[in-house]
Image 1 (cartoon, one colour):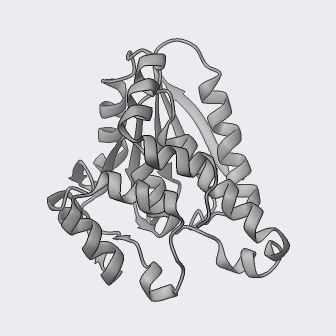
Image 2: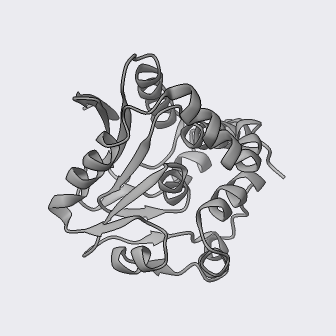
Image 3: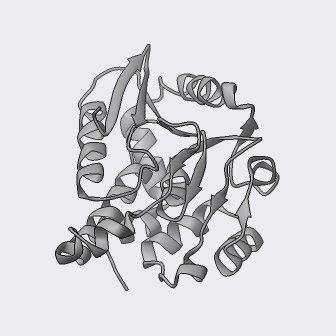
Length: 225
């Protein structure tokens, strides 16, 4: 099975991640970027929804085993490519919605935050930024991305505690826009995306780049420290 699958329902592109925990390694990021290329090259009304292909996972972030193994020799270049990928999603020229059907950890949580909107499963799955517990610092663009999406108190608590937050609490804390039953996650995400699909691409991207200028510039430039 391909690492990702891209299909279209009306004006909404649905990008399904099919790599188990959907951890970020070189082949996975390449597949994601290729799918984004296809969406970006489309014409007419459009919006994008991303979702995990397995019930338990949206994305668990960096593939640390790959980084310590086959990817060890390209660690710095790869992290730079991840930052640029997050920046690309954040500045994408059409509406984007993360359908968080399962766990969203670390860079996987940041991928969800890079979307314009988030719909999360209420009964199972956690949102977590565990860097404080796994001794991995955040690049400036990652910090700016997270900060741009969360209230100051939630920003502080998530980063400095590494707490795992379920769907209902994520909605209460403003991390996600909706917390729904498992069978409604993708349906609600598609509905939210479809309602925005006719927005003009140029103005939509221009407004996003203005709203989140600092985070987008840091990510697109791959700033590491």
